[in-house]
Image (cartoon, rainbow, N blue to C red; front, side, top):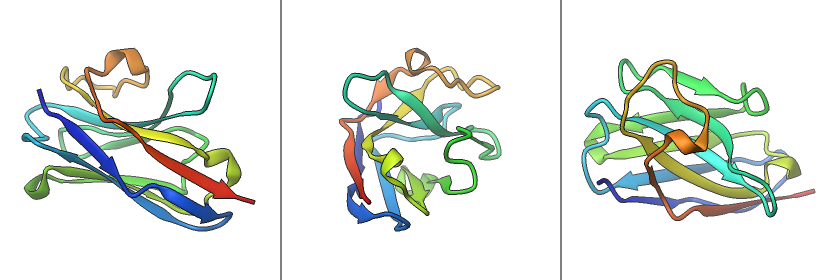
Length: 126
């Protein structure tokens, strides 16, 4: 397995930006897709963005498209989520996850992901 550690969360005002990082202790390519999910109290984990192992193709939820960008740096075994134009609706715990299947199209259901980080809190104030 590839333990994941997220970082970069915090408190930001509406319209601000944050960059989340997810560091993996092992190799992050090897036909593995990686994704970001978020969760608020009482709700299920919601798909945010994902990056496909082949050619780094990406997929985004409609709610973040045009504002968030995910990328990966294999040399650092790290993926990133750049979040711009944040709103209070983006407040959540953000998790990174690994899909060992490497399937295309990228999965958007949390149940399809095999390894999870511990999460990092993002709070956007109005």
